[in-house]
Length: 113
Image 1: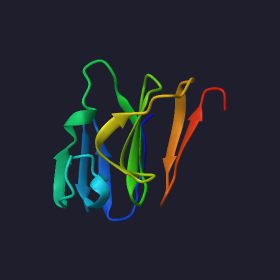
Image 2: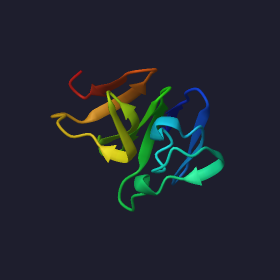
Image 3: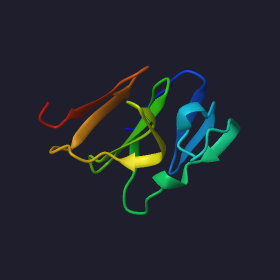
């Protein structure tokens, strides 16, 4: 099952690739720039030959992706940092099962709760 959650002023579509478009403010499109893209543009940093993106969540200023391996990636405005391209979240001791982003937060549900 592939899930997606959409935020304000942008859309991201799931197939074998991740596509992003809309307002690029805060680098929230994951394209390495704050430019606006009004046509679907492939997010090259989320293409893997051995893993699949199974969930995308788009908050107002950030986005997150969950892989079938339980790894999570995040980009955009995260706290006070602007992450320009999808970056692996480290420091989680358990596999991530679900992600949710909001206006100024990101939640990770792990396999132990």
